[in-house]
Length: 229
Length: 281
Image (tube, rainbow over all chains, first blue to last red; front, side, top):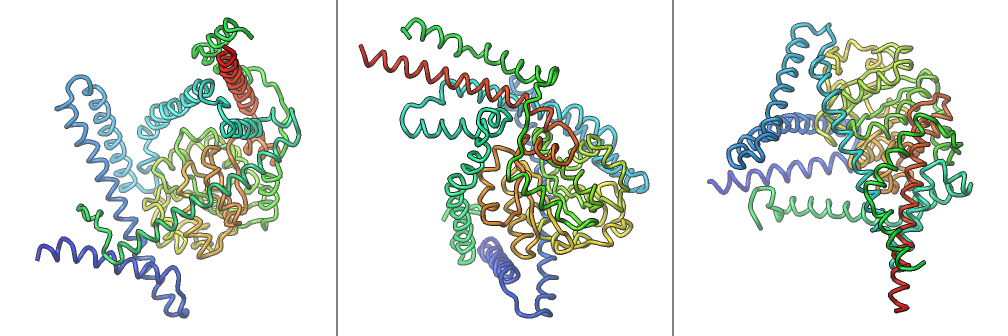
């Protein structure tokens, strides 16, 4: 019984959904059949949206739980960071709930979760600058690494360096000033050699997804059930 | 160059402090005193501009705002320039975000381009659906029916009360779908869920670092074109006649890139100088 509940039924559900989704996406019988299929397809997409919305809540709860454990286990070294994370999460949830409440009792106000003034203020004035600052620091890391890492040690590295210089100059207004053909050369690098390199990667990922789908369909893929093959 | 000179060059250019100070100066100086280096228009940006120009006045456009605040500097100037061109043609835009940061980023977009949005009426000329969870499933669902996917917009208005959403509902109602994203997957979702089943024209707005991985879709004509980073933004701002952050930051970008190239050149001089000296010995 437990094998049926734990393994057979979930795999059966996945297989049915896989077949149905493949049929919806790739096959067309006639307009009336397509109409029925389209309604089922839409229902499945909506279920996915609802499930993912609840998954976000689970994610939030998990961050909370993880940091509570961290405070208990890792001691004072980690505690300040975990406390800040938990406090900010609670504050944001509180303001979001206020926004949700206002949108429920007074929909005309135009205030919702993300437009709740304090929520938006914290996001715009605390989260946004921090996020931008962290991303901007990348410039300094890359610049300092480029001095030592970008050396033409061999022909391949020299080619990489030459291409990098062309693309970098092409991305600035200096490139066109140095040589008017720099933009065209950058575009050629991006559309021909770059595409040639990335297309197999994209196709490989596609074939990988097809293989995974087939393995799920024939019940060979069981890692998602929480066990090894 | 003898070993002492090489060691000195290595010491000077290997200094992180010097590099950081020069980088900060190269970033800030052009904002205080613009250099005005002319920006030429690439054929790819021109192609996108001409495509949007060829759309019928009053057309319907779908725009995905999928980026975090960190990516705003590169993507927002492109989006603002596109919005300007579309609004000038009286096109109507349905904005949506499949990322949680979308609503805040959209509010920042609206404040940056207040001059554009203030001339248009919310609900009639543009609508923002807010964050829709579900990622690719959401993109698929929105393609089938917007009304069937979301019941209220970002501001809590019922969808059926918004005049624009009485005119459009599914992917095929749109002349163009613009995907402004800081990730790679978003482009894949829209190619799979909007282009392949419904043949909706897609236009990508991508970060410079992401663009190479998305390029195959453009090459295969699954997207009509792609605007990449601040360089494209600067070009597009010139084309639509609205100077913004894209153009303002081009001088900074040029100076910092030039500085990095100088350091790369110095790194190579030191490396080869040392290597040749060691071989001679």
